[in-house]
Image 1 (cartoon, rainbow, N blue to C red):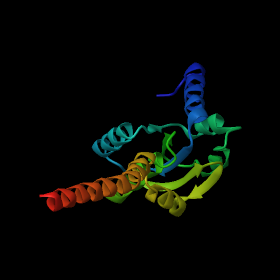
Image 2: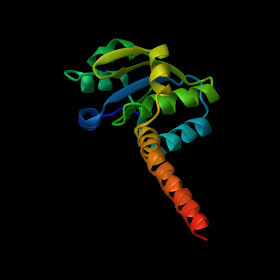
Image 3: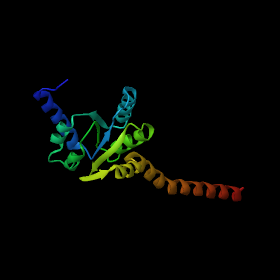
Length: 165
């Protein structure tokens, strides 16, 4: 079904608004994918806070004009699914992990921090731990010395009590 001009303007405005807050845009080809697989991919994207849509390439090209993602315009050819995220690694992680499970999804390119990324670079970006993972590791590292100090104090206290008895 063809979109009328007002619908097209609404789609361009929606994508533009989404890209205004985004840090990463990843595009993947979905040729021959089954509906159930696409539904699973969409659910996985929602869980990770990733905006995932199948859109007309010409409309997305208009939406990326004048944004840091404009360099991807020449990659927008064929049946594509667009993943956009405010988290620098979420979009890359979702599409890369899903592409490993379903060979019908092929990551073509991406853009992060104004740089156009090829498929290998998107895979590298996907391998970076997410912000939440990094924060939990930092918290663990910060708590380790305190926990060790508390154990040393407890051992010292036990030793003093044993000497007193």
